[in-house]
Length: 514
Image 1 (tube, rainbow, N blue to C red):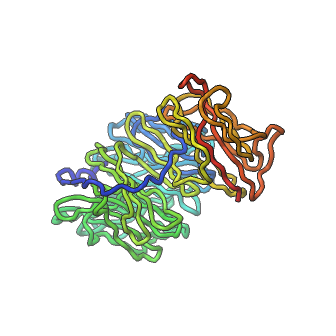
Image 2: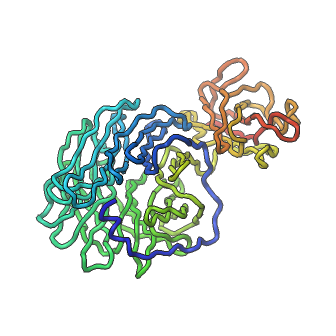
Image 3: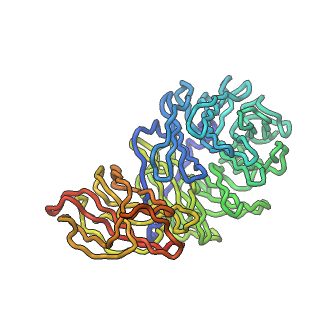
């Protein structure tokens, strides 16, 4: 990743053991696995709750679109330069529905000819163009974001000659480039300083069109870099900048919350150790510094996930030293920045992005990685329990999304299913009790009339999600529209071979339509 990684090769870090773990608040709705290229995965969200993932491996890449249930919509190769360090650095969905993926060629910092590339795809995945950008020296791009007026912005590091300098200075410098929806470069601003090197790792376009970039600056007399940030108008006029901040560390990501405030996460250098650091800035520029202390600490607070309707923020934290992820954790913050709980786990989260209804999509790195949709809590009321199946545990059915009729985004999802078995979701307004049901294991907790969803095969992780249309609920007499105040009940019937039976049933769940 160029200079920004090389600067920290000699630094030390520690990871404190987590304090008492709170109850896990995230439930897996679905998991999309298999055939993902490489390990550098970036996520974006479509307006209908689908997920875009961009990934790259040795001289190859891919952009893949999933729908709200994790089913593949399309997959298109992503052009990757044939250099060892070339990789995808970001993906975004533009206001016109086009998808843009950012790649930098991985040329050594300072080398002549290092550039970045943006590939554009139609909403259906048809390649439109791949455009090369950059100046006479190496230009590393690390972030891309859609702009509300159309097109996109890119931020990174320039080693000289790319764009118009904000003030005369030295290099490397940070840059922000503004492109229209056709990829035409509208302007490039280079944030230079006469006393420090500057770089940008993240960029956000606010709903008002303001562009804010975040990163680092380095004075060779300092032991560590310092956090840096700057803001520009949509036309590229520099409004404010802090190229040599008071805080040691660097910003690595940025996320705009629903209230308009911007969270940034990255490294923090207290003394001779490293830690994770989170900042919150209002649209007026008032900043609050938050730190991971007492519960979970590490080298980087990398990925903001989502704000909570109860206030505060969820973030993903991982040990990412020298590209060898060893530990990942989820941290829940209050509105005042207090760490409410933390959850550590094996593995590594490569990216996270918010979905509608306070849900989250994450991608996991490494061989066999996956894209997963997680729900914070669940909708509805749990009914009867399921019986243990061949996995040793009962299948559990929950409801994700929303019970709102106008949103029409209710998703039944089952976990702890046997892998790769046929399943269907039974649906009824009425409760019942039949045990055992149809000569299998488990208890049917619904009563006639009972409709059913289309069959779904469980994933290798034992997950299944089902398409439910509240305006056309399945019944034996044909589709029926749900009404506000209706109670609907759900239960999954699935193939299984345990206890002498050939089928089993999940727990049941009911919901009142709102």
